[in-house]
Picture 1 (spheres, helix red, strand yellow):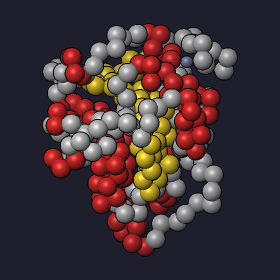
Picture 2 (cartoon, rainbow, N blue to C red):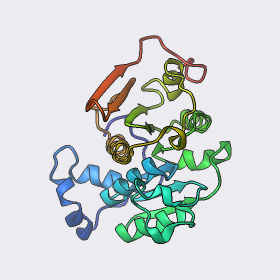
Picture 3 (cartoon, rainbow, N blue to C red):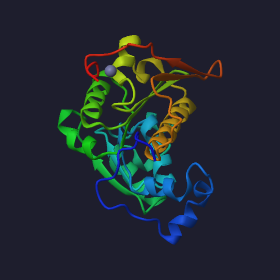
Length: 259
Ligand SMILES: [Zn+2]
């Protein structure tokens, strides 16, 4: 396990025999092994925004054996969410997303502790971020993204950011002390605050990006050394292209310029 990992604060738990059998297809991977699966078991992942990205990410994290997941969202499930937010069912319409999501995730994996926060994300959530081993930014507005980036930087918490609109998606991993932060990326690509309501979103694209966020988050938790630091990853679902864009040397933002 390398230094990108934020270690659990309590005594680490070991996998039971039942869990070791359940996650066998992970454990046979030499890059994961028992140590990696136990790192997931002892990890706390915070998913901010439980829409298209967040439901895809949380489902993969929960099914894969992450021990504790906190879902943060104040939204209600709407019928227009169902084409892409596949964690929710028709009966969930008009329920709070975090409540419906927690119910379905617990049914998927009873070993996973699910916590929910039902108020909009802001600076008051610093304690939750400080407790997390990784944060997944699955929100859809830049103001919230800036707050998440600041809290992750201040608490030295790894951040996996995802975004999707139309047929396009993007991903960015920030490890405080190891890479540039999300604010540095924003200096390069200061996009208008477009929403999927206005611009549209092709359903599979948001699932692809959310699931990719979960993969990156688990690789952070397991201390993989292959993480795409200082890089923006983009996906184009019309051209069927993935691209990596390396942030220029010397790029800094006001938040992380002193490190
Ligand atoms: Zn920065």
